[in-house]
Image (cartoon, rainbow, N blue to C red):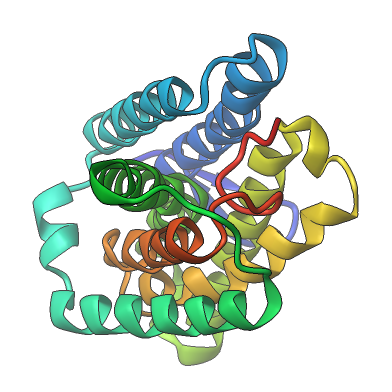
Length: 234
């Protein structure tokens, strides 16, 4: 594997540069999908979620395929801990939401079940995959085999960088919606500090989507007409 010395005395591998390019592509996609399909084309919300979900899943699979990331092994990595942490963070976010967001009217019966599954589980899961799991895993993949990973302080520093990448991805995605180009952007960025923790702690891609899906399910059940959750907002 080709190595390129940096001016700071570190070593960047060809694989690391590849991961950085994928991260840059992820930022473009994260902004472009809501900007084009929700802000410009103003598609119906549920149709937009379908396009968004398909795009995110394909992007994640392409990233794993072309950078040699073993999806099955990643999902098996500390999966009990990732699952538990995902559920705990989902509960934490849900409690915060219930205490800070007003309750609104919601549909009943089958429409509510469909909204929980589609807007809560599916949309929430792919949101967690793109905004948290992907950037965190990409940063750790970029630094695989580096000297920093051999010591706790170095690993902690990489973790901080991975979390920063997730925060930037979250900001870029929400900035694609016109109503989040305001002080409202702070809420999802702060929330990312919570729902990213399961994947950050385990490097398992399912942790963050579980936490994020839990948040969106709570939004459907408690604050269906909220102007903060379940974008795009008309």
